[in-house]
Length: 271
Image (cartoon, rainbow, N blue to C red):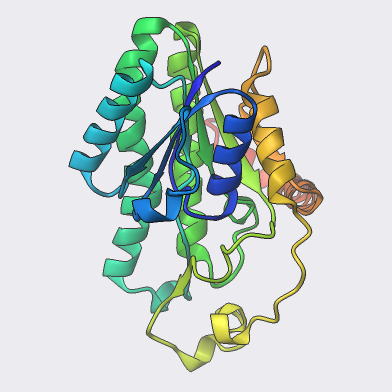
């Protein structure tokens, strides 16, 4: 039995993962900005807490309560977040900073809060939720792709730093799942520039044609549990056939371009 601290449990993958970890016999610290949304999760092995990941005091208090209740955090899942759509030129500075405060700085703050305990025990697992958007960088989602790319870059270095201490780090890139991510959890810029109507504008909330999501969040949660509990947890995990197919297509196209420009790349070496 391990203790999982999961952020963003009010709905979506966070909620499903909290339920899956509980049902698998683990202790769960389920958090959300509105604790009332977690009332039905509370129980002997589930501690529900209010946590806004942009608030350092709440982060410190949540980790302290987890340690008091269950003795420490064995698995941290940085899941809290939301989508943001805008052409790069349309993005408001305050909106972008808030996005990074939530996805990147919030994740880093939680990692720093749980690491002293994990290091002392020489064990633990950190799971950072990214998105296939970080790889495919779709128009209209430049800032969201950027913040998830930042999470991935940080996670790669963190994995190397923590591996000798018995702590794993896994980045998860989901595709499209049947959650509320494209609904309540999606925001966009107030500014609209007509010149981007045919690119970023096609992805604005009012213009998107909703299609059935191929991904099952229950199966996604089970996959994350399986990855964390593996003898060697993966550094990088794609979830969903759509994510897998898109990732391979992007990597092939990128490698093809690298090959086309190989001579120019090599030409910059000293002769």
